[in-house]
Image 1 (cartoon, one colour):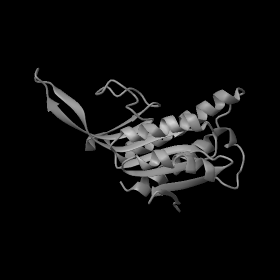
Image 2 (tube, rainbow, N blue to C red; image 1 turned 180 degrees about the vertical axis):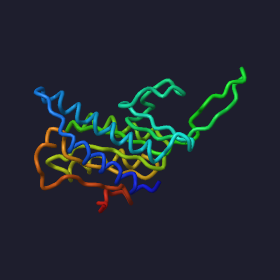
Image 3 (cartoon, one colour; image 1 turned 30 degrees about the vertical axis):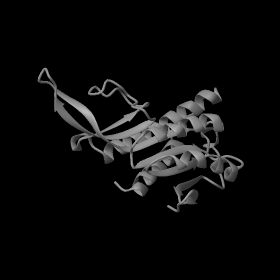
Image 4 (tube, helix red, strand yellow; image 1 turned 90 degrees about the vertical axis):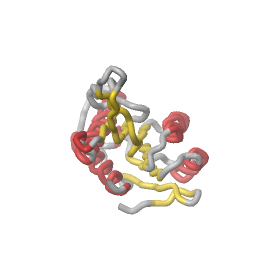
Length: 192
């Protein structure tokens, strides 16, 4: 799957989450529910694109536990991995991660410290495709500039997707999303 196909899949999940119109009188809980639903939609779409039968596994904090690995989330909010098997000393078939394919982190809170922590997780992975999803903020240029120091040390292709905060999903906005790719020491806008 090509990089921009994964980005399009995320944008499709975003539109699906907005259309779902989750409502709750507790706005904090509503935002959390909307964000969780969005991550779940991305995960479902990735599971379709990277089927288990093709030796892939999609880990996510919003999905049921993967019985082969005894966990839901594996290192990142969403992690697509290629798997293989080995035979254990007790002659059992054991699955293991052969390759990290896509790593996705998300942080909708407009808090640079929290975003930096999640973005830093992508430093630790070895996938060729890494994606950070954050909220659109007031001073976008200053914000994305602040992430350059981390982006410089991340191996692989890095995309930054800026979306409306879940609290803003009920309203129409002039700017719905931005997609940036880190290239040649700068964030470059990607048109989809």
